[in-house]
Length: 324
Image 1 (cartoon, rainbow, N blue to C red):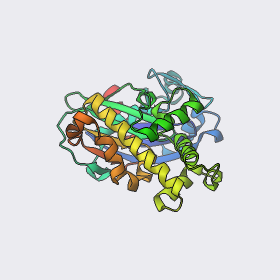
Image 2 (image 1 turned 120 degrees about the vertical axis):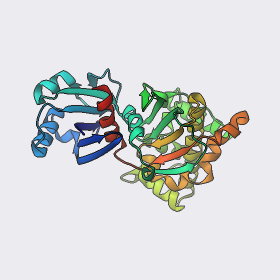
Image 3 (image 1 turned 180 degrees about the vertical axis):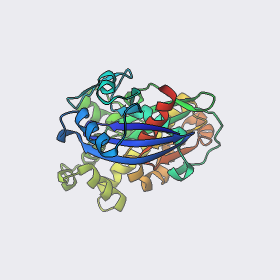
């Protein structure tokens, strides 16, 4: 039994937890959430958490961070924080400390998943040890390619959310032109993300010849659009979610082809569980499976939504056992 301090650090929030790892099973003994802007730095957050938990030094620490890292340092893009594992180890007496990318943590977390934490979209015909990909729309679009390494899956470094958007039909051709005017190069993250959902909604307004919507003035517009679309109370929101689900499916299908994911595609991130009803419709799988000569093979690829909100924390604990 290993005891590990784990964290999931984003630009806005930090979550810290105490984890117990026994083989592939991770139990989180305590999870605390912090607003980064209310604290001077990570040291202030971590000191309070460790004091309250009574955790002694000489333990392992693995932190998942929202950005590229060499495992020892990270400079956040949207937060004036720099983290160095050497300084954390000196300050808190960790036996060892490691940083990993937040979506790599999701990839590591696939090793800990139980069936109860998954909602199957397509059963497929999984092959033991076949490659897996975790794909997650949230603030951005994370992609984690995972290869079998004898007794566990190991994620490979990836910035797959920044691959180019490939339109499937004339409507999506118009979307590409619309998005290109806003952003220049159009990556799939420009669409499959919280900010992307807002641009997608504006495109649907443009297509309908409408200039604005009260949904965009809501305190949380992406949430308001999602709720209106799921409830079918706003036709533009319905159209927006339809396009989102189709393009999400197409993109997941492209990654299934690129990595030959006979082990499955797993949808993570904050958006997929919230949009589960639309992903369970035919829209997502139609986009996923429509791959021309490879459509028959696409039907053999398992697809599931990860329902466990702590998959990143559990992945950080699993990674600590492998890397530290």
